[in-house]
Image (cartoon, rainbow, N blue to C red; front, side, top):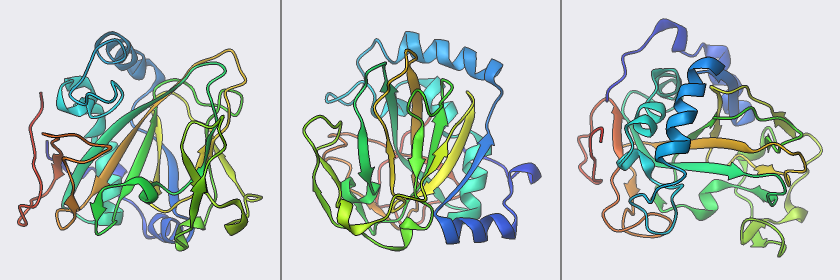
Length: 251
């Protein structure tokens, strides 16, 4: 899919400057809560209960086998805005669902690039809310400006969802922002923006999807963890004159 720029999706200079300064943008709406309700039903039926192309996780890489996931990941409201940051040629290299049931564990403060198979490490992510995401059910938190430094990571606490976390001595979390979202809303953030989500202490599930976007100049190590042998990306916008990576069309 190649999106065509829509004027309402084009970033202003002030928005670009805000992203450069703070490492995130949003929230924006890709669709209404009512529209997302239909997508949610498809995800619950066709994704969360079925095996996908990644043998490690049903939550990963479902753009490869599910049209609804492919269409959500390539939504012009998302891709055209990321083009305002990264330029006209864009590759979606990963999608991942983040399901946190009541009682679900904390995801610690971290920078995504610490975990990723990209060289050079260039990425902008969109986090799309499938359910309503609130402070009570563990919305994502971010630290504005934290993307300006690459931070050391250390072993996470045993009750956390990740094995590694950003070294608590290396940053100040006092300015953290809660990214509360309605279904169908999303925000964009850098590969180095510190973010986390707390334990879900509510009685409500929280489901979101991340879309990872990079450039054709970036080598995606597509046969390595957390990807898998045969992994394919999406040429979401523009052209790829480099030929480094594997692509597939809409399933």
